[in-house]
Amino acid sequence: MHCNLLSHPLYTFLNLALIFSLFFVIIRVGDRMNKVVIVGCGNVGMSYAYALLNQKNSVNELVLIDLNKERTIGEAMDLNHCLAFGPNKMKIIAGEYADCKDAAIVCIAAGANQKPGETRMDLIHKNSSIFKEIVGQVMSSGFHGIFLVATNPLDVMTYLTWKYSGLDTNHIIGTGTSLDTARLRFLIGDRLKINPKNVHAYVIGEHGDSEFIPWSNVNIGLKNIQEFLDQENCSKIEEEVRNAAYEIINRKGATYYGIGMCLARITSAILNDENTIITVSSYDKENNLFISLPTIINKEGVISKLFVNLSKEEEEKLKASIAYVKEAIVSLENE
Ligand SMILES: NC(=O)c1ccc[n+]([C@@H]2O[C@H](COP(=O)([O-])OP(=O)(O)OC[C@H]3O[C@@H](n4cnc5c(N)ncnc54)[C@H](O)[C@@H]3O)[C@@H](O)[C@H]2O)c1
Image (cartoon, rainbow, N blue to C red):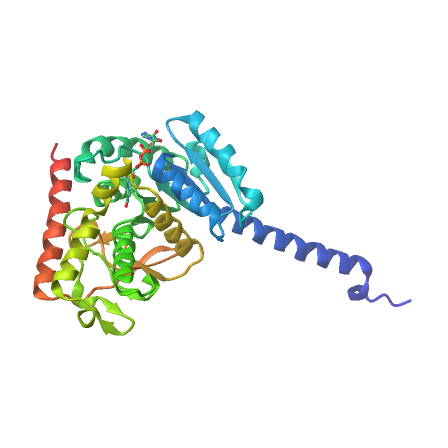
């Protein structure tokens, strides 16, 4: 009797098993890709973790690392207890540096924060020494993903992360002026009674006192801001943005919810391969440092910066901001 091999039940079974295994491998690879590690589980690190937990996203594993191991165990327990009511399925653990090996993103939020009256740049010595140790330990794990830096002084710490890691510049992202930009959009939206999502405005330069707003590029819908606000009001808003951290720190000791949301937003832009424009701190080849401009990011990290048409005065402000960051890096490297 002639036997058709293709219609044999064993052939069908083997085919199904192969398809199922391939499907399983794809899911597992996808799983591994969406692991996030947070180093530094204080105010900022845990606000980020909580924002990730509350927003629909594709993070499926979250690892917490801190000098204070007991705290990470407690934080992991607390976060795990949210899962029954959260939008995501996520594995959350207190981990070790070895866990960074297959992470898509390692966020560093460790280190000292500003005390009332301190500038971000005042933290440079305290935080640069701990970064050498942290980045070294992350890299020893075999990590080859994207670093996301939140610690201040932000642009200097982002630069040090690049130097200590030896990774490509596109894999190094600082939160930069993303938080300042969110503050700006809120303040303009609040004054004009416009949804901040429709306020097209960016803070650029250093994440610190030399940051500034290129007002010539600020639009509400398609109309320039000049049609809505005069110079005096724009200057007031710019001061409010620049002083926001000081105002919050004077009242509650630290700022963290805002930056937690920025970190979660940047994480989604990376993991969902969004090609989204955010004012993160990214590499500037001409000046060999990290600074914020509107930047396109996706799963490869930084794709490109969008060079903005600036007025003469705005160009000078950007140069001054870059020079300020450069000076801090040079003085640190000369010590
Ligand atoms: N990028 C931004 O826009 C932005 C906004 C707010 C705060 N920050 C900065 O974020 C940083 C963290 O602020 P915070 O309020 O969360 O501080 P925090 O004191 O609450 O937390 C810092 C954590 O880092 C941990 N840590 C210190 N050294 C470590 C090490 N070597 N290894 C592992 N963990 C270590 C501490 O144990 C602590 O849990 C500060 O530098 C702050 O200025 C940045």
